[in-house]
Image (cartoon, rainbow, N blue to C red):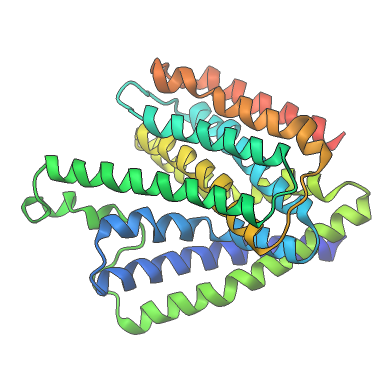
Length: 324
């Protein structure tokens, strides 16, 4: 058991490090090659930050452990709302009056309902995977058009002050980064991601077998919380800076990518059976958690400390049900 826990910890650490390294290298390479910052932010950064979950899902499918793949995605989406939003709200509270995430929230709900329909028709096959990826492409294209319109309606990029340059909004951008360092970041990411996924999945499967619980529960709890740590760190920092729109946008965007990109790609790689326990409880908990955001998005309710405590209590209760 101790070695399995060590494998999980090492695998998770390696995934987080490699994912961050790959994002830094890919972003700077793309900008050096002349790819617009807007395209980079909508594609490379978004996919790069989801790389750990994606590699875990693919590894789990190939290793005949689909419960971890499905549990990771469903559990991560629930954790993103109740834990990743609940903790920063409890620490500082969030003022959502100036946040306008209604459009992306509706897209997330649409993605959640599409994912629910695919699961009810399960198992997830390559055809279902292509449907999910097509929906993701539509969302990305809509985001691209909206962002381009926003850029066009405002001052041109070359008239912006340096601190307002869109390049400065991309994580990992360093105009002085050498070609050698770019190549090193990419190489470390490409080598570390599959190794980290291998360690984490193997350790998680062994833990589930040894303590007599299902792989799905391990995916919903240990793996899901672990892969939600980057989102948690981002939201806490954004909350401390009073950037409620960044907090909500990070959670909503992450949830859409989890449902459409990760399960979509993993479904193309191999069939993913939907465990009965996920159909009975966890999918509905995920959907309910997503719907909880509606009053904060549409009516601009403040996400204060009381709501943060309620979210965290709800998540603790959910984990208690899973583990018992």
